[in-house]
Image (cartoon, rainbow, N blue to C red; front, side, top):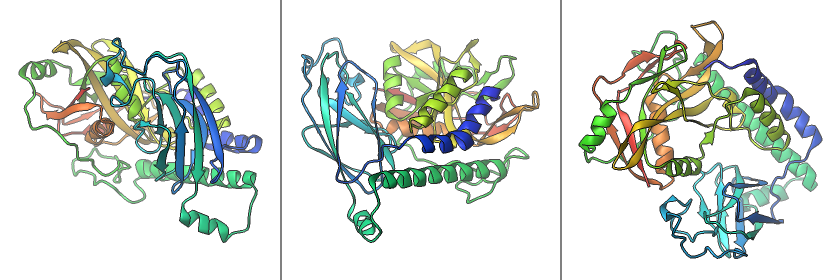
Length: 422
């Protein structure tokens, strides 16, 4: 996955130039305890509206939303399947919210909703599907935690602007420190290890992994349907680059409509990767300038079924994305099961940079334990409540040790994670 010159520019802009330039020119919108905010959200949008409001750990957020105006779709619309809504149990067209740093699961909001912020977050607002033409107004009140209030009282009073600058500077320092720690752990094997490196790891790979502790999925013990097993048995085991070099392994399968897939991934805080490097540079500049996190770094093209990926998704902490990100590519399979679309995925975790053995250029380096990324995808989807069941399946001729197209070695138990969506 070789970064282009434009991609390198993104890295330089994010890590060096943009943060300093942007802070000198604008004041971020950091939530001030005791202050009230008001936001109007149009019902016609099906995307999340960014309030540009940063929230800190320990704060309590109270949201009161008005009823939707100009909307006749509070009753179920026969043209919309409720299970495809962000929150199936909530009325169609009702106000919803999301905190990007807390699993991204949508939250129904009403006349008085209280959110307790457990980690630094960013507030987004939207509507629960529907085809309404009106809008709603959300009133947001932020209250500091008792501990932070006492600490604040013990210090010299500062202006609101100074508080905002200091808070944003602290956030940036933490993000840069996280990025550096993740990069060093992945690149040189420094720092505390969170997962042991298997004894059969490829020579030259980092002895320390930046992969989080292994997740434990709630998987079904019921065997997969025989026809679905047959379809999976017939899938290619690995993807390839444009030169037909075999690369990443196929390590998970999603079963569901495109709408179900996109809704679940959005709820799980996965971001569609940029495909145009020039567009990516502009996006990085503008989003950083506006104090938004750039989470859509470009992803290279790989092939399965003799065609490029249908979608590329990625997930990472802001800023750290330039060196470390969870990501996968997704292809629509040429088969269906019980009338449902089958999607084939290949996921890996970037943990640094390495030399591309094909051409000597710089490329991303992956965590050799690719099962970690497979399970990370499953865990993120399972937390959204949009999955029916998850199962592991060991196909014939499983991939257990191999190298990707750039020469990085990886290992796996060979199992494919099968996720049925609802």
